[in-house]
Image 1: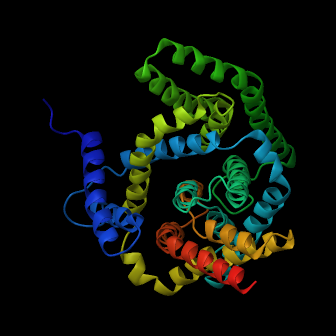
Image 2 (image 1 turned 90 degrees about the vertical axis):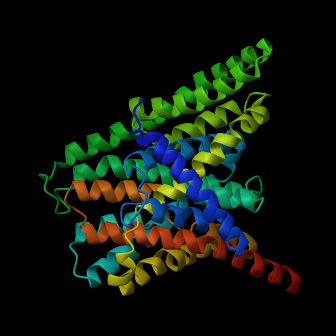
Image 3 (image 1 turned 45 degrees about the vertical axis):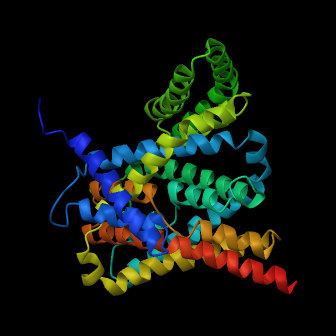
Length: 400
């Protein structure tokens, strides 16, 4: 039998190193997440010794994103999404704008062209799906009102990034990339087509999926086969996510979220969530390992001052903007702190946007390295942000 098996090697190496360093982190009273990220650095291409496949790891991590968003969708109804739209939509849009402007400001100080600054700022503006949801689950906030606002905010951010990924190639020429600048008519057509695709997918899920998926689950339950039920749940999550991406150019995460939200209409939704939990946890760990693999430790030494400024934009700038926006909507100090802590990191969409910016000639290798390093440092700081938010919230409640 062949022994050159990169898929098996990546899964085994990632999980074994993550387990060992996650246990060590827990022993040192640190979040296991820190150990998973350090495991990624150890198995990455920038450190000696064992190396996992850098192409396969992100694809495996994407499975974790799909299953995680699918599970969140099962806790979320259409009614819940509509209930938070008045704060989630304007809040996410304003927060993205503020973070992008801060990124453009830093890039201008560094002498970068405007196009690179826009891509850099946008990459710093969107929170990681996996990190946010894992934190909400860990603190038991996912089903709370604050958790619903955070998830709704996240959905809006993801929709904005879907539009950005579609429109950025069209605007690349105007922003200084290698492509010719399109006409306003072409830009308008691209935007209209993207919005139409998103609307068509949502309509399909609400009209057809809302009836078909619960009906299918009920048929499987009547067979009495637990194995077939588990397979049906996974096939639904992965199939809808993949179909949404291939047919409607929507992200895997959003496709899976809507699939879970539709499955919530079934009386067997809680059982479906339990059946998918083990795989969801395992692949979420691989997500953090894959993030750690992207970090070149040299960035921490060679570009320390600029990296510090980047992290401040992500952890402080974004959080302050989110806190101020939530307070403007007359939500409590407690809620504002929780939302701010939830959004004080960046992740998978930032990596995708940075890669696209590189391919379009808009983002330099230095800019991409800062985004990757900023993501990892902000993820490491995120548990501390949640702890601080909870501590100050309790103090405020005690004082009141």
